[in-house]
Image (cartoon, rainbow, N blue to C red; front, top):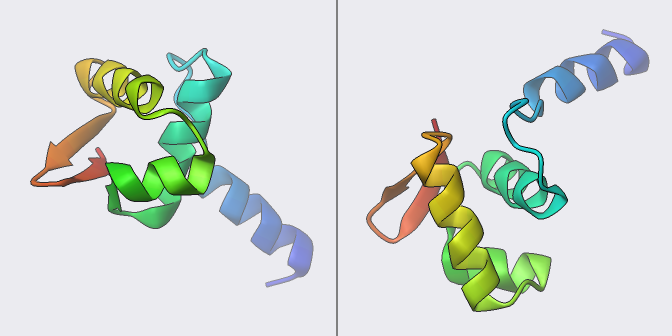
Length: 77
């Protein structure tokens, strides 16, 4: 696989659902997607987002059925 083919495959795997319009929500969603299973504290540290903002975004994504909470972690659906 050439480098450009690999980049296209990777970009396709990291697609953000159309219903996510907020840049912050896109960032959180992609972070959860890339890490495969993320704790809120890890996301907060990685993204530098205030805890209240992060939880609001995570709740919004969960309400849209795009991520789910599994114990103390979040995963993409």
